[in-house]
Length: 340
Image (cartoon, rainbow, N blue to C red; front, side):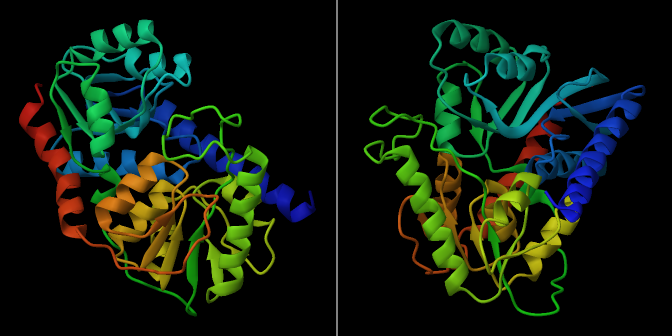
């Protein structure tokens, strides 16, 4: 690692630590609503969820703050906000996410995968059944969560769609791209958690095809520039020649402004697709996960699996107004159900 990379890496750590330290500092106060989630990990998409919920609930008149799930803050109502929060890929994480929720708590804009472990299914049901409100960001997540609770699960959309669209500012035209490191997460022939994944393709070959697709995209589009949504993305982007990479800053507004400035977007990260739809950009998506495919289908954006050849058939999103209205519905439902 050269000097510049070392400086960037250390700066990234300092920024993340600063966000977390600020949350700990604020946790000494009392709040009407506390929004908890993966808001200090360095993932800009997760932070975008928390900030959007916080800002809109403040507009509704509530004393609201966001916190990392690891922080114990004094809040009258707790909200678990967005992200892939419901799954048993990590029992520790699941119990951390749901464990602190009590009667009157809410889960907003959540994503979900099947819980395979039957004991964890029963535990999750006990926690979910006591909640005042559960909304899911897509129909797949809604249907999965509904298996584990008698509480009604309402399909909305990701709260990150609540952000305002910034003005477009770019010194020159460019194609924004969002590539992330990818591990298929299966052994050959075993069924993964996503039934669209072709497990007959050896994992190493699937990754190689993904990298070839990236190289083809970079060689084919105008001024490809990677917009990092995590510091992992910046490191990954260095693998590819002729790909410019924006500096990684743990900053929602700056990242959204970069997407707004792009002429069009190639989206792998879920929230790069969210930001692209929000900014009404012609897009294509590389669906490493069901959540990306679900959102692309809803917005009528062409998408491809990682190991598939990618066609550069960029398309403006459809259903954008409906998706954004569903994001606003999260706030309306909170206002209707909250008990303070």
